[in-house]
Length: 336
Image 1 (cartoon, rainbow, N blue to C red):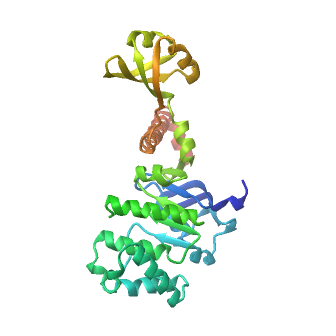
Image 2: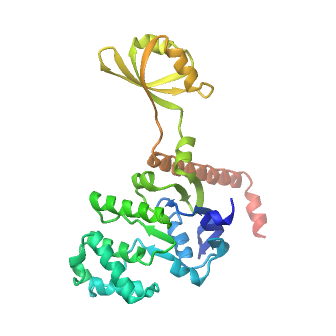
Image 3: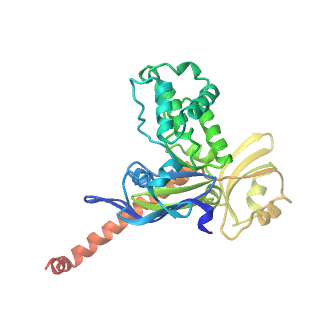
């Protein structure tokens, strides 16, 4: 794909802090007009990458491109950033502060006031205008900061845990606004631990673990790739006949009776067996009422990948330790 397809590209980015390497040759490509999930455990390197994109710090190696051009100070006005640690001034009035932040992003005062009035009305917070920030709850302040982040209509939005502090109703409101902003042309990078939200609104993801990009792609393709050929099948008929109808081609993981002579079984097909062939084999022996693929959740995939990554790292460390114990002289030679 050409650079025109991507709103942001990070290429082989390395970031070091003293003895710690926060990012190791991380590359990601964020498609334009998409919601892109930047995922990973705490300390994985997500925040370091976000800080580089926001030009708070710079990479030690590698590059960042916005719309196909090298990251530069001019791009600051094209980015809206909602940090995980919120930064509203508690003693200022809400409206006064929102106007100030809008003007910092290059908006004229009158236009900013008009746009703020629209957003405040949409979020039903018009009566907060003259309140001091310190009077607001965490969720209320979160709404204000979300508005100030998106107000200047940036091309690229970076939202770090945007649902923190919200109840389910307000979380749903923010999700709808994110999708609306995407549909209106914005690209959204969503950094979150909320895997349910990832499934609901993300088009693509990258999973950073131990400073490396260990998984990336579209949410649908990733879920398909991690599918284990498992299905939930509801059928009417004899259980024994069902189990024996396609001998050796599948495994029954679980089974329960729904009503008289009607059962639901969770099955896993062997690698060589296709679903259509399996159904052709069982239909003569029972009445198939429904077939549903069992697709892993993003939360299950997240845990599986992180645990696998940790196990690989442990094995590599043990292998190095074993080699060093077998050849202790190699360490001495390397230090001479």
